[in-house]
Image (tube, rainbow, N blue to C red; front, side):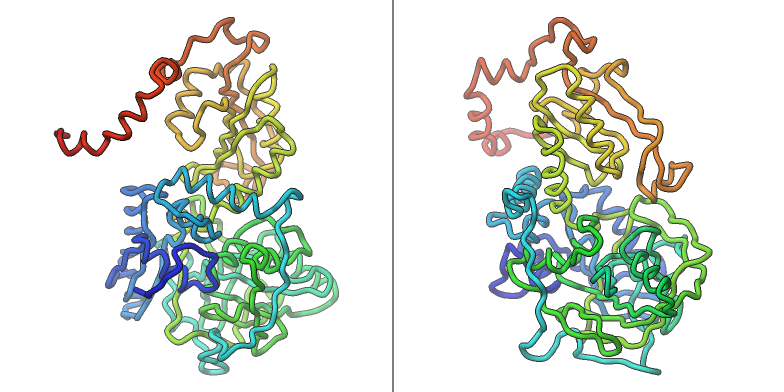
Length: 497
């Protein structure tokens, strides 16, 4: 383990971050796994099933069997385990293992960094100038190019093949600027990669802009193993067309991202990445997919999708690779999105207290409000339904309900909610593109559950009964503190048979 490891970030490299996870006891090292038997994928499922999203550690596989051959690792999985990892990524000063505390600490830390204008500082990237460039320790061209020689995994037997699924894809356009995004990338041969950018996404807009100008090819670069903040912005939807994700990364990091020019194009890429795949995309389309997507279902086979020819590979000695295990583990730090959503919806819903989208409940968003007047619960839910297309079921609760405690949320639904009139179905609106239940791609219905105490004007009872826990806290204000101070002694002196 690296000595003098910084236990909180921001981190300049993937390796620095992984060393910090290990120093905090949040990394499991596994000597070897047989991915020809899908051992790593089954392990990822079991890890989450037995430990949950927050408690499950990151893992590092030191040797892995792929295509009948044992290959030296590492392969990394579940590298953003729990809200304590988010706190580390963004630089929260005091990181603990209390997941609820770290959710709020990391969210609030990122919100505070946005300032009164609710906009994160931007710091422009700079050229890398000190010493040898890490991502260019090895340079491969021509016949030396063979991406199949590296340990890219077929995660699921249903996938079309091996995938590069955590790369930050760099594309540039004179009008639209730089775009950094994460798309699934199928390994099609020694120097060929298929990648999927959905219609309307930044990468798709750049490709179409080139095509409209009559250009027949587009230069692209895939950066693998970037620092965790670049990875977070690459996978997010927080920037608008024309905004540079790397400038936001620099602002969050407190220093500029250092870039270096590709060998075969003018595209600038992170100098500290583990590997860069440089290539050319033409508009000769090919079949791509299917692929197991982040919602836990097989993404569709695409009869026509983009293909990149690899022109050069540059990488560190013994590069580290991250596999997404999409649909199984958490893929990216969530604090950035939670902070952005909180800032956004507090402007629309002044009496909103908190909001939360659980990692293990895709499509569910819970918000709490300080309710004072009839109709505020449904109204708050409508704002969220319209402004957060990932939210398909919006649950609105009173401020006394802990939105991180799903038992408390479900208790509120069961005891404070009447489906009529406190439920609202929105028949058709914009939804998740990958939602397997949607009959039409990108279109969904939504439901608002107003689980706040319904006022008489809303059809609620004239009198709500007192809450037992609140009466305990009021009548015996020292009871919980007494139990907390004696908690360890209960377990030493008693038995749990």
